[in-house]
Length: 401
Image (spheres, rainbow, N blue to C red):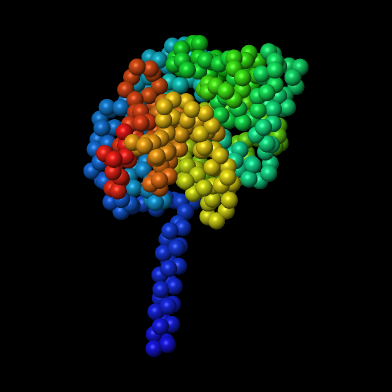
C-alpha cells in the first residue's frame, strides 16, 4: 500500500510539474498555436470579422493576430498592391511626401511603407512611442535612467534653445512621457495638412532643435496635447543620460531576451533614432512585447521591465476623452456598462493597433495602411467590441456599451 501511494504521489507530481511547464511556455522562439475554441473564443465570430476585413469594408488592413492564454488563436494577412494604390500620391509633393520621393519619409513609397523592402516587417508608426516607453522601463529596472521628475533642459545647452521661459524650465521627463509637455504644437490636424507640427518636424533636418525651440502654450502637466516631438526628445535624453543609443540598448535588453532578431528602425536626418514612429517589426514580434506587459514585465523568469513600471505606465495620467486616458505612452480605454474593464493599447498612424485586454488574457495586433483622410478605416472601439464579443465567457449585453 505504501508503494502504491508513493507511486501515485510521484505520478501526481509529474502531472503537476508537466502542467506548470505547459503553463509557462514562452514564445521566445515561436508562438504556440491553438484553435479559437481551444482558448475560449468563438471561431465563427472571428471568421466573420476576417471576411469583412478581406472584403475591404475597413480599408487597407494588412494583418490580424489574436493571442489568448499565450497561444495564437487566429492569424490572417491581407495583401494589397500599394505601389498601384498610392501611385499618383507618390509622385506629388505633399506633407506625407515632402522631400525626395524615394526616401523613408515618403509615406506612399511601397519600398518603405507599410512593409519595408518587401519584407514581413511592418511599420509601427506611433506604436514606436509605446515601445520607447517600454525601453525606458528596461533602463529604469537596471537603474540606468534618471528620475522622471528630472527637468528636460538638464540635457541641453540652454544657450542654444529658443523661447525659454518659466514653463519650459518646468518640463520634466514625466511630462514628455504623458503628452503634457505644454509646447505650442498642432498635431491634431490630419497628417496630410501642411500645418501639422509633426509633419513639419519630419521635414526639418534637426528634429530635436525644432521641438525644443517651440514656444510654450500651457503649463506642463496640465493639458493633454498629442506631440510626436516630445517622444523624439526622449531619444536625445536617453542617449545623453545612459550613454547608449536607444536602439542598441533595446536590442540588448529587450529584443534579444524576447527572441526578436528581425527588425528595422529608421533614423532622423541628423542620425538620431526615430522614437516617434520609425520602428518596424513583424506582428508576431510586436505581440511578444505586448505579451511581456501582460506578464507584468517578466519573461522566462527574468525581470525585463520592473512590474512597478508596468503598473505606472498603464495607470491613467491624464484624461483624453470620455473612456480614454493616457499613461506613459500608453492609450488606456475603458469598456463595460460600468466602465469596469480596461485595455492597454498602442496607436499608430495608418491602423497599427496592438491591444492588451488583461481581464481576459488577450493580446491583439492589427496592422494596416489607411493613411488618407476621409477613407474607410478600422476603429479601435470597433476592434475592441469585436474581440470582446468573440470571448465565450463574455456577457456582451451586460458588460459592453
